[in-house]
Length: 472
Image (cartoon, rainbow, N blue to C red; front, top):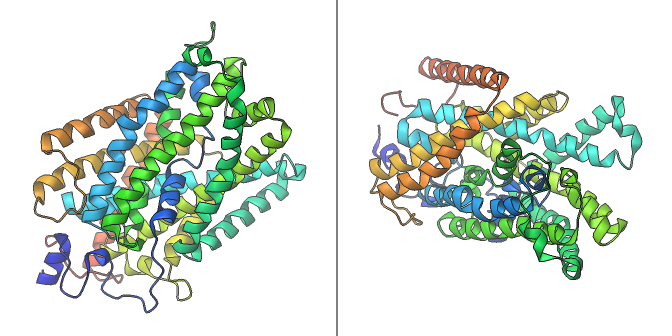
């Protein structure tokens, strides 16, 4: 291994390359893309995680008002904050595209880097497929022919292609579009919360639930988990961020506070102002509550906001998947082709195209069990991520960490154990079909690694880094 490669592997910028470009391939594109700045990055993180209070309502249905409020107050400290802290430290220590793939590869080698990439990529693209469908589900309330048949299929296809093209135009555009989508989709909730103030009866916040309604702990914890998850997805864009060592920690801090308030303020307002059967608190109830509080005009605005939120979620998560594949190509986990940039917009067009094609295929399937399996794979990836974080502190203590979690290794282990225990619970309660599908996907991911290893060693395909397995 050359000195240049050794410096890059240890997180030290080689001569002539600043730390912000660490992780990029040696062949830099001729056209330099615009870097993500603080405000667009905050909103991209927001859409990676939440996209608004849409989807928080089942927590009330599952466990009652008080436990729902406590859940969204306390769960960020158990799950979101540790995940955000890990992302802040490792994204500034290894500021290259690929994020968590780089962390696992640096900690445990290329096999685990490849496995992490496969788990996270599969879970990501399957989740993305839900968002164009969600857009059409809302539009069909206005345009009834979209409810079924070929008009629905064509509308899903067109919406996916249009949203993917927006992603192709570059992160600068996607980032500022996320700002606009965030402001418009959150505005009706701010208005609803303000109008609700005179109608709020605080005693409703203390209700443990309606008599005769059994608590659904599985629904409750899954609702909290998936509404406050995916903080690490933005790490795959680290190479596209302006001054990542400073920008990432600030953006994550603001995004955590912003996201938690976006969930809590409407939840406090609606619970306090509206008295309905607890079983009515299904997904989409906020729109019905808006009609009760302010009128039909606000309900329509929230429904339109849901479509805009789905668009923002699609754009943010598609960006993460595409740049993750580029990062894996930079590490020679995937062929060099996956790191190709478009000439016009300098975006990873192969990653965008592949993610889009898989998304289109999944959009036409009844993929409830597949999504559950994808979430299972994501949980496996998070356990590997926590392990990588702790091990990198021990393995590479000398690496410059512009942001450093202020704990020693025993404290880091404790910080990671609590969310890890929650992940284990989520996986234990999975169904048999989820175990089967997840197992098959994992076997496929392992087989893919050895196929790529064979191709690299026998020079069947072109890879960015010419180093054998032992050197890596």
